[in-house]
Image 1 (cartoon, helix red, strand yellow):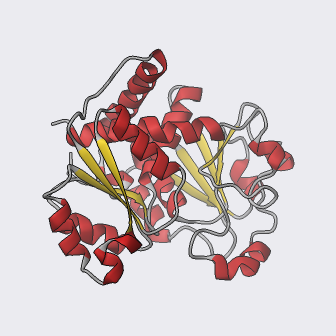
Image 2: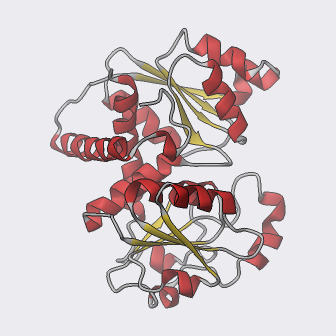
Length: 303
């Protein structure tokens, strides 16, 4: 396995299965109160350029439950906030900690950190991908549906970083992914082609209704990601008709379930009734960030 996890495609199908199976095992152990301090004596530096709830809490708690230690590092409080080059931070961190997780505005920052670090680097979110979120989503889908191969998954909304990782993951999971986005906010065609070239099944739809037709899983996300706040009114107008509501769910399979990586904006990309309703797996999905990331940390660090 590569030393870094910057993209969902940094792991193989076999490694993905090992991580998901490991997450299921660690989840059972946690609920049974069985200690699993597999990373005792190890430490994780967590660098945040962006605000965070689930990424921050899940990685910090995860390292604690694995017997290790996590350090929360706001980029503004580090020397990189005063202009120190990221490559210097990478070299120094490599001599202090066991791994680094970074949540960054630009994917190039994540890549530069990884290129200059001698320890594993984990992408906790960048403008290109959010691979840790997709690990949690795959775990959640597998828990509910069992075998994920050929399962129909519809993405409704912005072709953003989470969407990118979902599209690419089709090459590893065998899930059939259909994406519906407003004009100008589509997933990059080259990412779709990359997924297809690796065996992924990805299609696009012109409307949310067409995307979710007979779908087993419907995935959505905020229309206004961090850094897009200045475009709020423009985006709200462009995304009209892309709300995941009860009416849209009627086009999906009867047993369809809904995912949202959070934070949610009720009444925009999803209604409160759906978010809180019986078809929502959102809260299981949020919990599974913890278990999936613990399994990833063990995979990267337990040599």
